[in-house]
Amino acid sequence: MKKTLTAILAAATTMTMAAAPGQADSAQASAPDDRKAVVQRHLDELTKLSQTGAIARVVQDGRTWTARSGTAVWGKKVPMPVNGHFRIASVTKAFVAAAVLRLAGEGKIDLNGTVDRYLPGALKDGGKITVRMLLRHTSGLSDDASNDKYMSDEGTLKYRYTHVKTDELVKLSDDSPRRFAPGAKHSYSNANYYLLGMLIEKVTGNPWDQEAIRSLGLRATSYPGDKVSLPRPHARGYLWVGGKPLDITRLNTTAAGAAGGLVSTTADLDRFIDRLLSGKLLKPAQMRELLDVMPAAPGEEADGDPGPGIFRYATSCGKQVYGHSGGIAGYVTMVGSTVDRRHRAALNVTMASPDFNDSRLLMKAFDALFCG
Image (tube, rainbow, N blue to C red):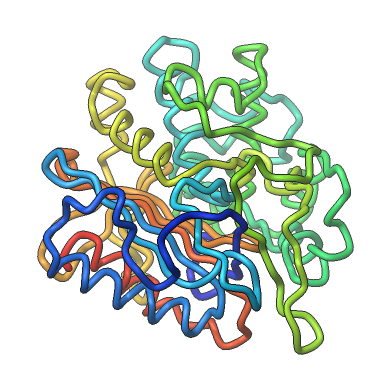
């Protein structure tokens, strides 16, 4: 469940709908034909390479339209459900960051407070790492050990039905060498958000996912925990194993937890990013914190300029888009919006081909949703 798109695997999904694969969904055909054609071409390129499917939702100046391509079930002509559920992976971090910032605005969390203050003993250097560092991935914590054990293809298969405790994930990180001194620079790590999930539960007494989804008005977003199935409709997810696709739809994602365990839809992701940037969820000081991104490190520009649980992406048409991406066994997801919320988009791609190892097509498709 890494954000870096070149490391992402994905999936496919099952549902019957009227439109055929490879055609834009006609139920919401309010987008200009030329723009839909460009988006459709990019989605078709993705699904031709990935051999499964893709869905997209765009809201621009009050108009909503959707597109889809490929198939929801490997080897069959099953249209992708535009309202399908999927695992959103690291897009979960945007939800968690929003909850932390909201709680900071309510005076329940001090972003300058240390890990030791809220979770004493959780880290050997918890007195040096602040909540803000966790939010912004500047803590220096590594998630290599937990990724190797649980997020690799081998780990996914070995532990796909296993409940993984967050305490274990944090310990794997704490026992690993730090990437750098706390606060020195940025380095993306799931370990930061494992700790933020624990922090939310400590200060509120509620499960982290309850706080992350609270007050958002989202009905299709959930944290399945130990439940391995997905709500219907949904697409089937695959891993490429032994030269063929292996159905990985059923999966326990407690190893992802607050760093990447939520399930949602493109419609709910759009509602979330709209709500997040509206100024109604966060107070002005926390909104300024949210939008205060830092320049991407050399060589990481394609991953966006990082902020607290959100990234700013530059597009080919000059629009600045705030959002997040994520990938987990079965699915790749991106969501973003211009800061004025007039143009928003969500994209989910499912794939099982071993050839899908280049993020450029995915980023081009996401760019087309804003600049097509």
